[in-house]
Structures are given as structure tokens and as C-alpha cells.
View 1 (cartoon, helix red, strand yellow):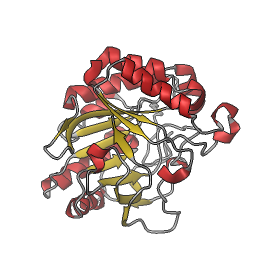
View 2 (view 1 turned 90 degrees about the vertical axis):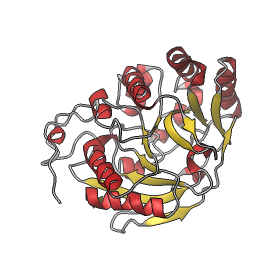
View 3 (view 1 turned 135 degrees about the vertical axis):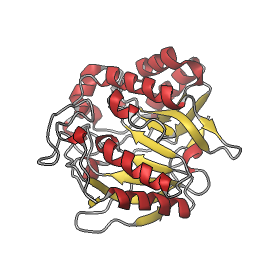
Length: 316
């Protein structure tokens, strides 16, 4: 079924606000009006509250509204690898993941497809989808778009990438990232609150904020954690990610062209401890591509796959 969304005709779906008619051309994100998916899988490498014992049902969307020079998923986020699907197809995929035992449906890089995904979620819920919906985003979101998801998304899994605008502009083409992301986090919290888990320790509702620690302090980790503490106190659930390695165009930036050192990650852990955050997920330090899925090259059909990643998440 062909649908039209007014939000896409003069696109303001995300804060890039490029104003493109996505029925005629592609936006800043590289996407047109049709959903595009690269990979569907039961993912065992997410935070334990998401992966559980059976895996998180991840749906990797193509394209992205940020152009991060170090993106580990750049083949799909910037290269656009993937296949177009309808909202009905997407809903059926969600239901298939539920049947396969997924603890949740995890929509990865969904922001630029917000109207289409909201419709797909409605269709899936009407057909019996009962597991939580995870909105796994970069937090470069507009508040009106997030408000359109109220009652549809159970768990928000946003990044908080940068504390400083200069680095957000240089490395991700988003000068206003820190202020926009903080407003987005506020809306997410207004909808679902602190992270909640069931008797088995699996997330059912709430916000879990990720922060990828970058080499040379370029993410502004100390300032970022201070901002989160100032806004949400010690109850906020954090995931401090150590999986950075040079990918995409990182080799063009000497300050990014190396992996994370143990002392850099330890400084992040120490800051979280000093601020007394009550729930912090940590990662094994890794400077390789072991965290990156094997995305489907152009021209090959996407299909559900069960993958066990070598990387492990720990809860501290």
C-alpha cells in the first residue's frame, strides 16, 4: 500500500530540517519516502537488559541524519546499502522477531523514517505485537517527531555523542547536537521515565543512554556525564561504550585514527563512579570491527539472521 506523509513533503522530520520533498528527491539523510532496511537479526551483543537470553530483535535501517566521519555502520548509514520495504512488510518482520523469541523489537537508526515506522508499529501492534519497541537512535531528534511516537515506543536507547558543539559539527555535521540531544532526552524521559526491568532482568520500559568514548577526549565525556547528572541525577541508566575503532573516514582525522586506550576508558568509568550513577553498563575494550554486523551488500536480499557477537556487555 502506498502512503503519503505530509511530514516528508517539506521534510522537517529531524533537526537537519532540510526541507526536501522526499517523494521527489532524497533528504540530507540520503533517504527518500520508502522504508529501507539492511539487516534483521537476533542480536546478542546489546546491553544485557536488551539482549537477555534470547536476543534483541534488531532491524537495521539504511541511511542516517548524521554524517559521522567514524561511523562503524557507514556502509548502510552513508552508503545506503539495503532494500526498500513497505510498512506492512516491516510490521510482519516485527511479528516474525517476536515469534523467533526476541525480547524486543530494536529499531536501529530510525529517526529519518519516524512517520513510516510509527505506522509500521501501529500495524504490528494491531496484529498482536506485544514485546517492547526499542528506539535506538543518535538522539539528534526533533521534539515534535518524538511526540508522534508517544504510546508506541516503550524503550528509548539514545546516544549522547558530544558535549561540545565544535566537535559535533566537525565530526558529525551537527553543530547544535548537544542542545538538540538534551531536548530530545527530556522528551524521551517525559514519555517513558527511568529504565524498568521485569523479574528476569529484561528491560520493559524507560530510557537507557549510550555514550561512545572517543580518543583524545573528543566526545567530551567528562562534560557529557556532568550534563546527564545535572539533568537526571544518579538514577539515569548509562551505557559507557568502549568499542571505538577507526572506521569510514576516520583515517582523514589523525586525532581519530587510533583505537581507544585503556586509560581513556578508565577515566570515563572513574567519572561515572565519582558521580555515583546507580546503573552503568560497561564494555570490554576493543579496537577491532568485532562489534560491527556483517551488513548485506547491495543487490542481495535481506533476511532474518541469528548472530552471536563476540563482544560482551557487562553491568557494573
